[in-house]
Length: 285
Image (cartoon, rainbow, N blue to C red):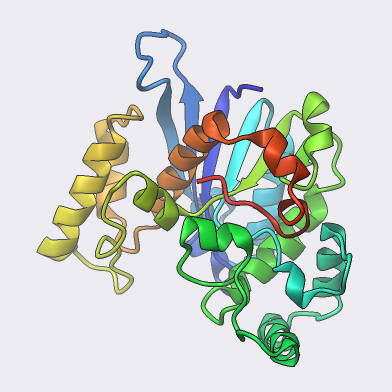
């Protein structure tokens, strides 16, 4: 299955999520002149500017609407698609995780504490990583306090409304839908993509904003130069990437770049048959 468009989404579960959610759009180059750079970065937007508000509910609803309206599209989303199987009941399937989150209202932090309590009762590590997190060397487990809001709102309020939608396949949970899918959603991790590409994965973000420090500017330039060998980036979008202090714009691009590579190279049949991936998720980075 090939895609005309690949979207990378740097996600946020904060109250003003739209301010930090960025969407990068990659379109297949029609001229066919470059085998090494088959896609071009054609759009790069902050969701707040697309929907007119940064409020979480409105921003996530707008994102869901964009996904539903897409066709021949691969969406790479930067949030965990599932919890490790150990913190769910034996034999639990992935849709049950969505229902589990719906029982907690808006208490995302409480979900993290509940997962910690379940892990404690097992008698092992308190922060259990999914197999894919170990393999991709992700910085945090899915219910770590620094990631729990992304996981909670991403799974409940984005994947929750989409997984039953006709023409949509959320992987690795719905491989059976691929033949009829018009849009495919996969989990991404920009930091893991940087590691796989042998690029710096630290000191390129400046959450405080303002002009980038010299060290962060150098690091970001190294990353953007390397990505430019895989993706056509025009000067306008390069300026946006370099000027976005928090690095969210760059992370959206990295999510898409990692997804394009992973989609071509991973063993999809192995992932679909795996004993854990279809229950807790798999990173395509």
